[in-house]
Picture 1 (cartoon, helix red, strand yellow):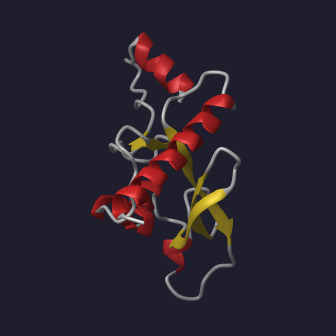
Picture 2 (cartoon, helix red, strand yellow; picture 1 turned 45 degrees about the vertical axis):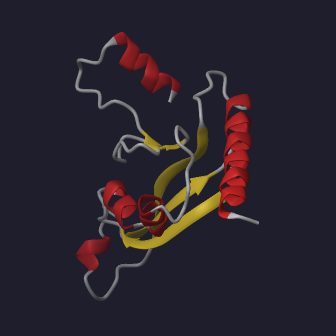
Length: 146
């Protein structure tokens, strides 16, 4: 199998994921291959560097960043950052983002992940507009659909 065949097969998989996501939403968002978010897992107070694990909710935690497909199946998990870390910083450090940026993991042009406002906008990661109180009606609609 050639590299082109591999890319074509991966493109077909991404297209199928998009169709599956669209079928499950009342207002489909086009070309979605996965959704990303972080969550905190509570831990006991660490003996060393406990302040790094003290999160904004006043608890000690580690953060799990996960990407799921349209069936809520985990397709990527990155675990272990201290609870004080922001989702954007964790995304920046994550092996999957590094693989995408380096071109080792191919996301077909126009296809993307969906994230919340804690993540940065990238060509392969769509996020909502920041609501500063001055969003246009189209931006508000985009956020609702996202």
